[in-house]
Image (cartoon, rainbow, N blue to C red; front, top):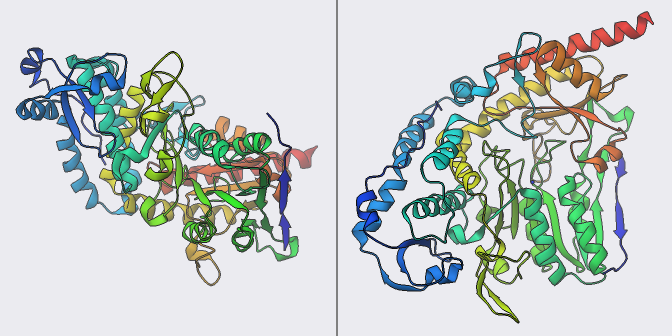
Length: 541
């Protein structure tokens, strides 16, 4: 067994159900609102809603918080009703989804995704197997964002007029939905909206990292990390003198490989051994976007916290696909992207423990994140506003909230069970294709001896593979052009793991809730056809 990537990088000190009804905020409170001059604010610390009369500047969040009086509760309830109309339909959909058989989820939800019902050039019906890169969007999300632009487009937190109040209410409601979805301890105050998961990790690197890392301090990662969880730490290490250490891969020798399994898995035993007195942060994926394997997060957190280190979780490939409870995991940070979980691009979020966020300085300056601004200094808002400078991605946040509604209605246990059903099917079928080599562990049901606390098997409905004698781009291009099947080719923003395995690129098929076994079979038939075509062409030459 070869260990790949057991390295330490010392850098010099230098200066990520059925179709739901369109979201339609009801204007039942409009008449009362036109005669009442107030603005909505969320209490950022408790998550409770208050509607307060504004007596301050419309540009400063603090200005709108300087209340002269609280609006009559009947009016508050009227506004609450006007912006919550779609929640009633969500409850109905959730009840029906909970009764659905998980094995039929793909067929049940396909009509929710209009993009899937099209033919690609060549007349083939589209088969989309690139959801680990980005998921498709259900009508519920599309309609929620369309409704914002059609009915209540306005800036949030600043205005005292009707549209701004509705926009603020829906924007902050999205934060509440996200907090419930991952079960934060302190509610929405522990959710920071970011542009994507990459920005969430950079926020931690530049705010927490620059304030807490010193020369010789260690940041522990794995060779299997996404570039977004490597490059920010390289940049911060250059500025602080911190040391990056990487847990290696275990790559089976050729003689140790079974059938078409290419093996390769993070050496989690070594990862735990590397956590020591100089460790300040462990930044690790929950689920690998290449191997599909799951890190033993609870064991990592227990070991890291025992030496006073923080834990950052890249949860981009877990939160969309399985129940994730940050209280149970006990991590300090988690970075998540919206576009991989049925939500729009352009937004993600950072979960941060409230005490840790409160200790961190601002990362970006501007409007919204301040309390008061003077010519010689400024004071700053409490989290999460402290880290959300400028006008946010309002429509995208509302879309993310709608995506959370959608997945909640399906039931995350149902989602995960269905994807494990697809994962096992894909793995078995690909393993039977001649010349194909799959990377990463088998699904838990196929693990010799079964899963363990350290080795949990393949928990994602994705298979990264190579074909002997063919480049991954040729495989992907032929599948697309001849069979209408969209898969990924390249290094998947994870070059170090490919270097460790000893390949330049790989192909990756990744499924989600809208994929079915029948349509996945088309991709396998196409793969066999692709291999036969190239092998025969080479033989004829």
